[in-house]
Length: 577
Image (cartoon, rainbow, N blue to C red; front, top):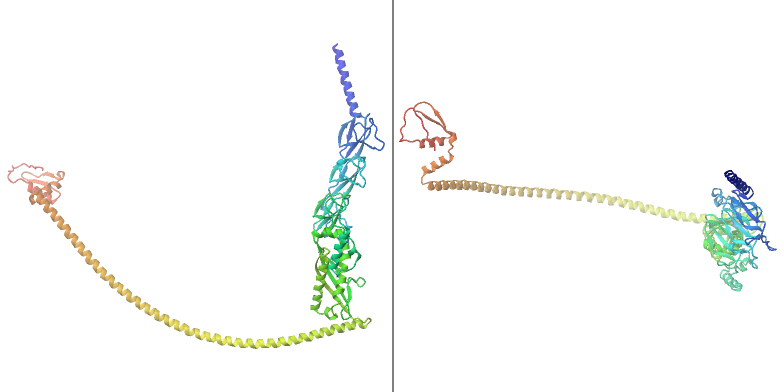
């Protein structure tokens, strides 16, 4: 029984292993890391007649959902799959970008014409088109991503990796909008509502501007209707421009035109003999004048939208405004000057200022900034054609030059006479300066001598006065010293006298207290007596000696010696006090 159970368990484990291996081999769906898998349902509800992709759960056919890289398990009887590549949107490499400072002249011309694209690996975007879903409304091209409507999605794919069902979406790679420094991007909405502005009012305003600026040409472009700027959501050019940077803008929805900001150069000069762009016009005296002009002009960022809206690109600005107006103004103003005016420097400068002012006025009405119109080259040709034309022109130049040379010579002589007069006046003033200098030196010496004498006199008087004051002070000091000595001597004498008198009075009072001088002496002796100072010496029979330290004590001992007591020979006695 036990062996049967073990065998049954073994069979079950083997069956499980076989089923696991079967599921791993037949049910497993492996999607590589750079691929995605589109699921296809083999069983289920059939699709509608015009339906290509299943949009509801349980429908048979291609499913909208896709599987990313990884490992999945699906029943092969119900499901099938197709491996598709992932959609990669490149992010670009900024180190390969080619900017404006490295562009050639041909590339700059293409940039001004609006046909240039920067070279390099720039960021890309993905423009997505939904191929299945609800039908769009009439005229509807751009749709929202979550609307489920067929058409171009408003949203774009930014750089990255996406798993996209190619049966549902179509992705087109486009470069992102890159605006370098020194440029702005003018945005034009390709779809939206049309701005509501009546054409008659726009034409009336345009006619008023032309009436205020009669110097403008009657070009047909100037008389045409200019569409007004659009507001957000409207179709047309937007007023707000894009600053330098990288923008992910749907090119199907909006168009961005690069426009260089700042001042540019436009020249009408002689390049070669066959390519002569100088402006020709007759002078007031009939001479043919040819001038080469360079215009420094630019665009302000706040007017970028108006310029692109009206002209489209920079080349049309040059062709429709700068070039024709420059030729017209040169001819209108230059025809009022004589030929000699273009040879003289002062008249040429007046012509250049008038040309600049008029060109600035006209271009300002077109939102263009003109900094300067510089007249660089001027040629004057005689009106008679042929070989003599050049000779007449040279004669005119020579006559004008000789006239100027004569005038300048006359002015030089006048200035030389004035200079000689000034030099003579200068020499006279120099002599006056020398005389004044010597006079000042003599006066200075006299003043110095007088000051020194006055100083010596004042010093002597001050010295004598000082000696007198010193002697007077020394006399007073001597008198005070004598008085001091006298007072001190008298004081010392008085002190000694008073001390002596005090001592005498003290002794007198003591004697009076004791009753007699003998009693006072005895008191003094007793007060000063010191018994330890008495020494007894035995010197033999009949001799009595004492050793006293003071004479007064000896005297006192004599006074104490008894006179009435007899002394026996061979004995000695002393009576102490």
